[in-house]
Amino acid sequence: MASPDAPILLDTHTLVWMATGDPRLQRIDRTALLDPKRDLLVSAVTAFELADLQQRGRIAMIESLDFLREHMNFQVIDLPAQCWRIAAGLPPIHGDPVDRMLIAHALTDELTLATADANIRRYPVPYI
Image (cartoon, rainbow, N blue to C red; front, side):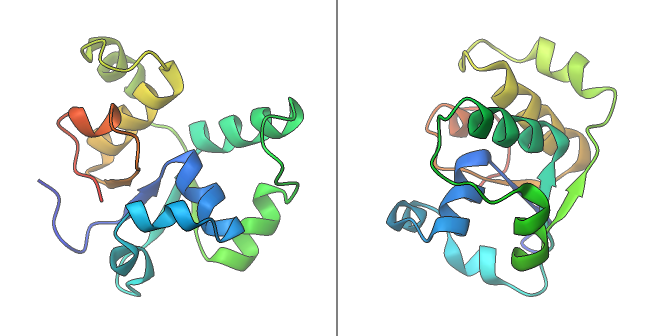
């Protein structure tokens, strides 16, 4: 279990909801997201997914990750190389390989994952 001040790793939908003020953000502990003692982090795998969704027109948000980073005070962090091994060993609860890589990243770096995805929450990963 992650400590209450562990850095928070943002799932893609959480990042989009925060950027757009989407009311679905209420599904996630906003107190933790706004806690100045907790760093907000975006995995390189989430950065890729956001760019891919934007390029394919799957989300309406046009702001770049760099723009969001400047205005939302988060850091983009590299995906540790060993994440592929952890992701490959996860049970097949979630069919999305990007989400399994994000879970592996949170587990590897002992981060709390900010997600409303019910399938992700079934894994043994700390989440808000």
